[in-house]
Amino acid sequence: MPKSFKDVAERQQLLLEMAQSFTYKPIGEQDELDIHFYLPKDLKEGEPRPVILFFHSGAFDRGSKIQFAPHALYFIERGAVCGLVSYRTKESHPETNPTEALQDGVSAIRFVRQYQEKLHIDPEKVVVLGAQAGATIAGCAAMNAPIPDDCEWEKNPDQNGHPNAAVLLSPFIKISREHYGAEEFVDVAECKRASLFRHIKAKCPPMLLVAGTADRLIPFEHAEQFALKMQKKRNVFEFLPFEGRGSNYFNLNVDPVSYEVCLGAIDNFLVEQGFLEEQKEGQEDVRVISWRETDF
Picture 1 (tube, rainbow, N blue to C red):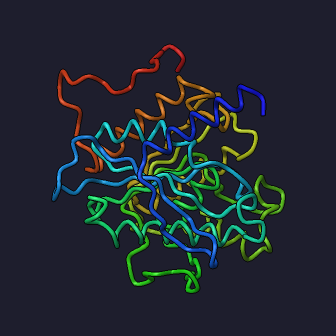
Picture 2: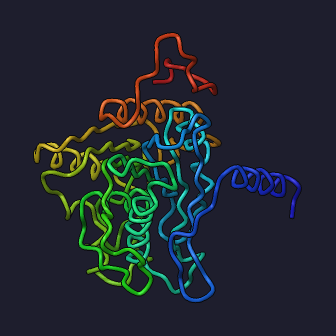
């Protein structure tokens, strides 16, 4: 392994070692899915906090939960418990399909509510945040898409598997054979199940949708159409277009400036919806990478 790759792998391992790992779902007799939780330093017993569950990007074929570690480290400074969720992909589970990844999202939400006391979380303040395939998982859970129960592995099927808010970064909104990520779907029925556009309804939990106007993988017009219809249904729905950005604006190691703007937008949204407290006047801003407003 080249030294640069080895260094990255070691840094990623160190980031995971900073977290507490919990198995939230067994898969077969010798496999399991986990969530790595980061806890706020000022956490006190009997003081429940909001929880943010992060679902990494990809096209249901691969991806790494460590992608959202910088975001998690930011939000624990803002008082939230943060969990990096492993879900089934083609790379980790070759026989899997996207429907099983959608089921994993619901299972992760049920898990944090079942163990709310141990995890110090407020079960009425469960936020899901994802990118691309991860955003589709988050969106389907939030919009109560018709996801089959994962009865074979589910330990707590009676627990509520729907979040109280969702942040969607470039999700797959309309999925058909000509669109990015569709090759992982078994058939048309599965494409429909994962297409957020088909689940638009009133009384969805508050949502923030972020999309790059120059995204070559996920059509920006899909995001525009989705936002318009969700707002027409009188949902609490915020839409942030990223002018001239593609699909990696939320990654610290790719675009630090866009990462910060995205982070700030998410923070503002969660404050407005009552999931985070406003930063006190004079309190040091936890965003410390860069902030060049002239870029926007």
